[in-house]
Length: 132
Ligand SMILES: [Fe+2]
Ligand SMILES: [Fe+2]
Image 1 (cartoon, protein in one colour):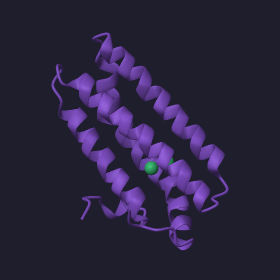
Image 2 (cartoon, protein in one colour; image 1 turned 180 degrees about the vertical axis):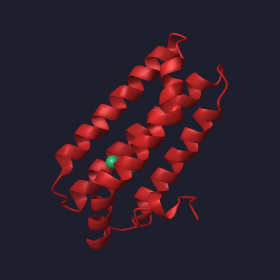
Image 3 (cartoon, rainbow, N blue to C red; image 1 turned 60 degrees about the vertical axis):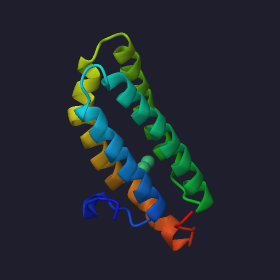
C-alpha cells in the first residue's frame, strides 16, 4: 500500500508511487522546524523535478496528446517552488510556509484531477509496464 486515498490514486502504479513520495516529502517539509526547512524544501523541489520529467516521458510513451498544457503547468509550479527555495536560502520563510500549508495541498489535489488522471488512464490502457 502506498498510503494514497482513492481520490489521490490515478490507477497507474508508477505515477501513484511518485505521488506517494511527493506527499511524504511534503509532509516532512510541512513539519520541519526553521533550521530543517531549507533542506526539506530542497528535497521536495528535487523530487518534483524528477516527478515531472518522469511524467513527461510517460506521456510521450503512451502517446498522450495534451502534453503541452500539462508540461506548462509543471514548469509553472516548479518555477514557483524554485522561487520559494531561493527565498528560504535568504532566510525568508513566510511564502514557503504558506505554500506548504495551503497552496501545495490545493495544487496537488487539482493537478491530479485535471491533468494527471487522463494520461494515467491512457498509460494504463496502452499497457505500459507498471513495475520497474
Ligand atoms: Fe504527477
Ligand atoms: Fe503532472
